[in-house]
Image 1 (cartoon, rainbow, N blue to C red):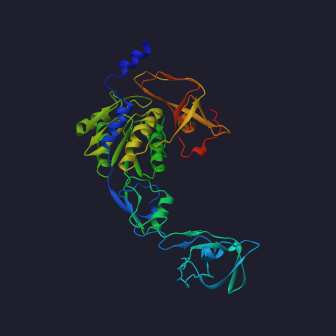
Image 2 (image 1 turned 120 degrees about the vertical axis):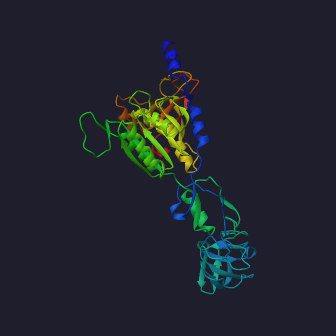
Image 3 (image 1 turned 60 degrees about the horizontal axis):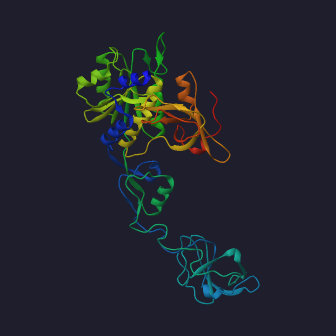
Length: 427
């Protein structure tokens, strides 16, 4: 009970995790639109309804190599009772039509070829035999419409192929190309600036002095952004008001969103929020009842969203992927949460922090031979090791003190595909 009371005191003035998520969602909007070639649009978000310019196919086409026939002519055909038809022409994909199918005749067609006028069905070539170029023996029937793809059956001119907000995956893009388009209008992906703050922090690759550390947070965030096709650049600023101010102003004009890492908690050396206040930013919340990651703040400077993230690796990562990254994706028209979710059975009890808090736990998810998921906590003293090696996250939501062994709970995957879930990783 004493712990709960301490957490209540600590959380005074904080917003809840869901409230913070909703505030970000309400205040982040697509940064713009652009037109791109279909081959470069994979994974992008449609900025408008995409309308078919032409029907596909434009005419009835054959789905098989074979012969275009009248169905009634071969209704009684069988291996023991083949039907003999006169071959009066041929039709190939991309070429003009050859003749008209009449009773007693057939036209040889290849897959993808327009079916000639008068065709009722196409009988597959393996069910035929040609004793001569001018005749064919048919050994099976073919009902009307057999092996024919009707004009407009894949997509009709004027159809909405993909609605505004849809993710354009390769299959969609192929359909869009078939419908006569070569370019699409998509939401522009935001440009992100990341500023690491701290006298002890230096950019990776620079000489490391005693007491200094490399800005691994910056690389982790940049890598997540790259995974979603978002470009970013980063810089490092000393724990000095003027240095922080210059870094923010250097990026705010070019970037669509600014992230700061470190210097955001509230001690005399945590200067970021003070600098932003002097620059006149509009703060929407400061600190969230979530763990790790409670030190996140969010607001606007010169109409640009600014996320102030804590500097500790675990807190930084959780604040980034649970709140900042979804907001950044929304700037690109993408409303999804970045982490896919599956249901998994808990193998152990999972304690939370307090009923009013949301707690995220590093975890390892695995799948048995029957495809069922189970999940357990990932335990390691090193937070960087946990960030690198945990493959999932368990959430103890606000309103719960703990989760219990045997429960089936939503689990966020830190991997992109469910088929990457395998055996549990040993710490």
